Image (tube, rainbow, N blue to C red):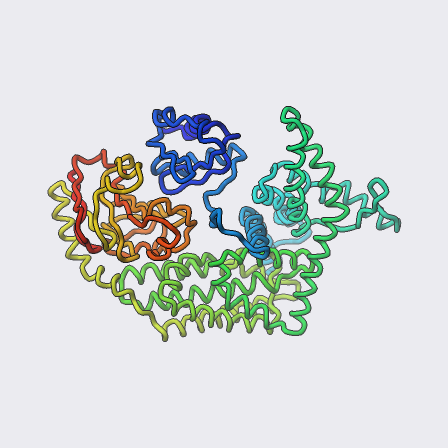
Length: 630
């Protein structure tokens, strides 16, 4: 078995060490280094390294080709260095974000990593509320008290958790950042504040008064603190000699950032949180139906834009300040249920068997709280289910807004979050959220069923031909021969004509390439989707006969960060010949200056005796393109 940690260390050494790496990303098969000095990299040594398939220095990137295991090597490098993780960054060097976009990106990047911790703790809180409501546990018992502080821990120490994730976002030392988070909730600090408040005096540092603010479960103060740290730490690194960095950079960072946070940034963040809460309270008092209505209606667009992570802190801030969240949790739950209802209607009405299976699975998943499969696989693909989701979400959101429904714990917004709606006033809040869920599901399901969908004619025609092609494939298989069909309509060319040495020289395997004339990728055989990359420009398939296929749409298109690509399947999904896998916008990709030629290769070519291909002619998706002799 390959030692990926060792391989990662060897690669890092041969590219000039960690200090020579400005940033690192990866695509389907390659590590993509942005080096400070390309001359320090030893390309020849890398080519001879066991586990490295090839090396390409092109377009300002030093690319080390690994193959299908690239993620494992990448993860080992990122986890054991301070190299900038640029694998999932959507913006290019020429793309500038506005202030609002940067703020939302920062909030999302800080909250996303800690969601499992707060979701797990929130669910435990919800379970305890359920046990208490039915008198199944004595609140004075040791069992209840232990489970209670376990469920409280993630929220109590939220500033420390947020400091860790924000440090990665701001590219500062994670452990120094966590120390600053710990300062805000240190027992001595809390006791000093309590004593000063009791005595009517003030707590000061060198004669400067420290405002008496509680930071337990707080959100905004620590994000401001780590933002400030992102300016102080680099400054300290510049003015302190490198040989003294390990001691004096953290010292200078702590001695500046911690006091400024306690005196200025912490209170400022606290006041911002209070103001945000009062703003929500104002809306709840005078137009209580508005915010849940808007969130219930537009959550799909927020998810697509990644802005839904910007709403989560609002809900958490409400839980910290008011003990109830009437914004983020209820509205997003209603929307997710509506997404499930609209998608299940597609499963009931669709004629295509594969589409029925996809919609049924995605619909149930959406009700549980994970909407991406339904959203990208059904709603955005057919559009009408999206409108049904919005109408259903809006209807349910309007009802829960009027009834003032809120949740009492931070839990993932799915059907299993219902116990978090059991409050101190009994079951009335829970009953209202259940009614809201029923409204959103029924309305979305009904609208989606009435509107129906316009099934993809290309998809249908491919399905109509599936059985005949499967028969041909089975006949070929019995003769120790495997036939693969063109995944894209366009001009088939030899792999050697591709303007990329890794593909042209067959480093990753044999096959062919297609210059697309249509922006759709269909399944070239029966199999399973074994790889679908975050940037959606490439996918891997393993056929039932063991052929490992890579379809790479465009050259260097990983830099697009997913723009102009829309996946229609998920990783791990079983597919049939002719199924629609991916859609892409040819013209937009060309406008951004990228070659759209699509290599179609067998990455485990060495496992077969011979691979022949159809080239130098126009070919339609579904026509034979590769013959593989086993």
